[in-house]
Image (cartoon, rainbow, N blue to C red; front, side):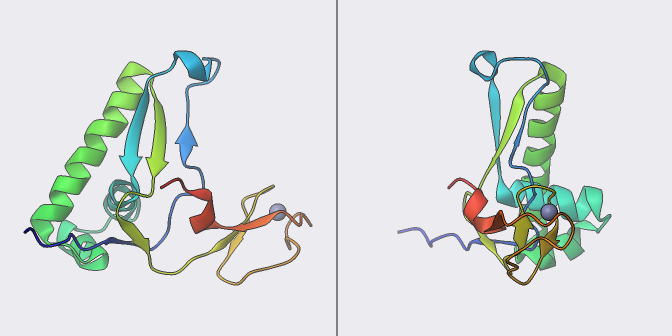
Length: 134
Ligand SMILES: [Zn+2]
């Protein structure tokens, strides 16, 4: 029997989990599916500028595993851009470190749940983790 895989640790899930080319109906688009772990690897290395070993430590995976996750993420982003595909980010086997709450109107986020958005006054607030498909 194989050992169950440890969930990938994700600190900040993305605010948008579906990106599509403008002006193309969804029904005629191919969709690239990216896991939350791949998205987190992109965030840590390409956006935050972390070294692979530092990002691996954050996600609690080995450095070769981080590099493999990141390579896969790069291929998917490239596929979406080069071929004009939509990109969907799914939960996969990732585990969120600390949930945040997001205003559905203006994307204001906070670690604490709020009733009314301090930026735009909207009462449409959701936990980020609840917005992401399994
Ligand atoms: Zn708001």
